[in-house]
Length: 267
Image (tube, rainbow, N blue to C red; front, top):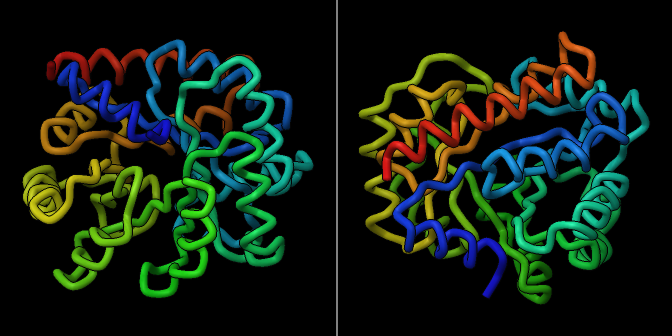
């Protein structure tokens, strides 16, 4: 059983919700990332989404886009990010790690080479935000060969046909984007999101995580009622825009504790 399936299975048996946290690899410099991941797991993160820095992150709002800029300026590229997973795995063999990024750097490296190296480093799944499910078959075949999960996005605008399509292909979890727009946007319609998540869950047993717009205990709890996981990114990443790295790590870990405590109130 994959690390993701194992982790979601454990949480389900405890009736707990998964906290999925997004971290930009190498933000603001490479030495920060791996110790930060360990501290976040210790504070209550269940699944890590490691962002691959890319120069044209069109699905991302300013918070994540600036994080990518900082990471690239600090010298981190896609293969460096994989190396960070390898280093993380020296101490943590249990926590699932999913790579989140864009198609271009993966195509440049080549599907086979990228996935083989990701597998060797201990990666569990891949989410490429600009690779629609209709075009994801060849990457999916390579991932399947290495028992890695391909994770897809669904949005408020997704048609029934797209939902069915994703439900057939998805593994690990499905990432439901709760807002129309870019990452880090502000307004959240909880009841609409809950209804959409029910609709997705009606056609698949794959866990559904909800992200975009979750930034505090209240929004995490509201979304946690409907979904199997809440996915938080900008609320963590923005700490690194204004604080010194050491301070940003402390603020991020405290934010994890706040969100974990809120989700555990749902048990």
